[in-house]
Length: 198
Length: 358
Image (cartoon, rainbow over all chains, first blue to last red; front, top):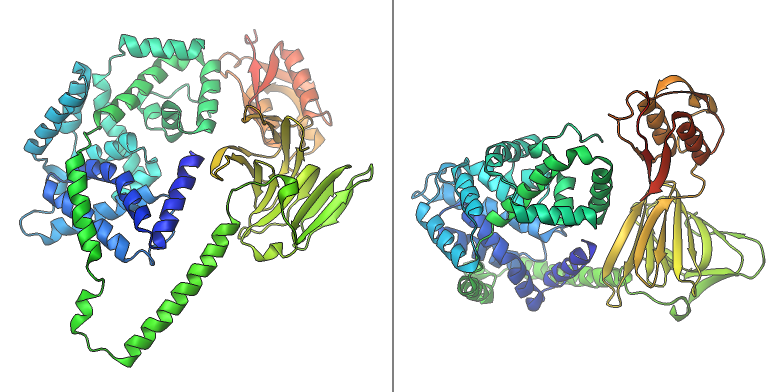
């Protein structure tokens, strides 16, 4: 989407010149996605909030030194993941494996109940969510980055710090497990037919 | 690319396929629409993959917590207000430190001015040809014949009759090479990856690094045409705010017709596609009992185009025809007549319609 990118380039440029308004726009534009992703890589909500705050504060302080970037979103995601990992490693309270294996079910449950308030939940969607929850952490992360945040396979690899093939493998094996959940619903089939007949 | 053997996971993890599902990339949308319309047998698998992609996107959605977002911003703002160099409070102020700071500020200011100027040059704001202001070098061709103009950077412009173009006298000082065209011209651009070459025709922009192409943009006509001979060309428009809007990428032998009123791009092949690969000789097109897939591959490679056909239905088609110096359309016509098929050109691709061969 060229239009989208040009607008975002402009915000980034203004931000680097020290424009506070542009900085606020940058925050508003990306904070939702960063919180979503953050909760995927760690169950500790405070840790994620702190990391995102630090990320933006440091970004502002180093604004003259940060390089031009083709995708601000990509830059922020990569920086957030790095930050969260470093915090997990330095904090004795957490084991570094936390990010790999455990998911705090409490925080997930609260998410889940919030969701129900927001939208009508189909049974299929519930099934899919519980299947995703059973995937290994890194597969969950890859799926989140690829399908919700719409990063390309290559970008997913770079954010997660693995090679391209590993990222593709995470996504592919996750899909293999999730496919079982797939039932073509009547509505989506109708949409599909309409699409081809038009 | 043959997708007929792809399963659900293959599709659902394919970048271009996901772009199609999300309708986020016009190129991918066109490509997959076309591919699916010629390969009905994969629709079932494709639909499953499409739903999987959409469901996954939906499943990962989380609510937006406005309270959390606001409280985080408060903390960020207060973090930003604190002077940046609190840590250096205890540090002794030395003259060297002050000097270094002064130098840094000077450098930062000059960089700032420099980048400002650069960015101003890259603005996508468009001007009608007449409105581009003074200190420009202008070439007007009032004769009935094309004129050849060589620019300072070695690029050549063959200006068609009754056409004109201009550029800033010091245009090589800018970060992009900008020329403004009214009418029609063929450009052979000297390669310079650091200074893109941009042709402005009212709201249409043609951007290249080094290549040759033709632009036809008479100010009062309803549509503009850009045709590419070599290299890769990006054609796009901007809206009145100077923001980049839609665009297409053109490869050799492709052209785009931009309809100004509808702001739509129609990509097709040029009328007479040329052979792009100099090593290909006319004898290479002599076919004797050659599988049709091989024949199409040869044409694809020679003219840099894509031929879309159903490999499965046409697997029994073999061709015995001595072709040579005919034009590409002539070749396709003869091939199709011989095997009882027909072809059409959709979106700069050749699509073969065939019921197969016995």
